[in-house]
Image 1: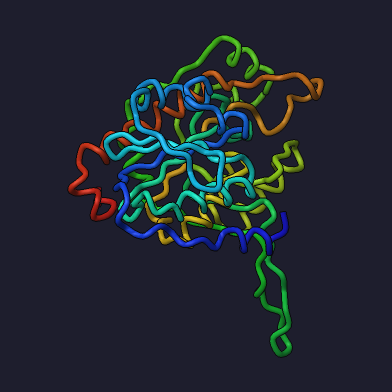
Image 2: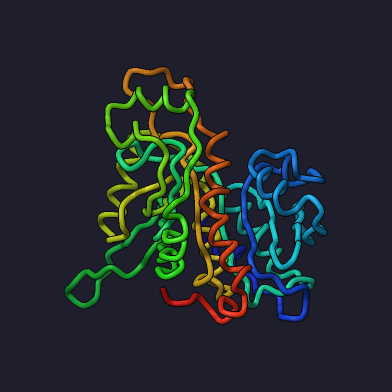
Length: 313
């Protein structure tokens, strides 16, 4: 999708206050088939949220989309479409829906991603500190006799540091799931980090849409993070830049937290067939829930404080 189309689709105002007040909105991405399914409890991506929080919740079809939003006691869950274009369309439609009041809401993204073996192991959970588009570019233009960087393509966002600190603090005792299949596949990678049991870490989320992988993609992501001083490359996904952009336009970016598990590596182990799979999807969806739940519980349990903004630690 061209940058122009991306920006046009992104410019959608948020709904005005007056609808159902929401405190926390869980955002997960999946395929159109899963978005349109009602109830959604059969999608693995959202099963743990649904079973524990939304099995008896009210739900509404978001106008102009195939997505349903589930709401119970101020906590909401919605599966938005995959990819930058799909995420922009779904999230923009949600924020324009006058039935819901997002004026005080926090947004928590949970979803799958690819992880570089030099940064983490599959099953591990990344709490994003930066969101960086893989197509991010700075072009030099003439200004008098000098060339200066002026035109940028793609986008770079710094997420709320205090919100990230809260999530890390509340996850200090969180135990992540693992299984024998994922552990066996991780041993095909020589790096010590890639072989570790799942852990929680802080890094940069890089967006590639449509999603691609391979050593060249990984090296370019690392180089972009280094050149723009945007932390270290931690996960590769398809939607986070679109989500961050739409929320920034709606003035909600400061209340966005992105939590993604590494369900596969961003490159195949050396010498292995391209179609050989080592996906850790089953443990990834569990670990997404375990890593996101503590902050959600904290916000809902202390809403009088959180509704005014992220408390200082």
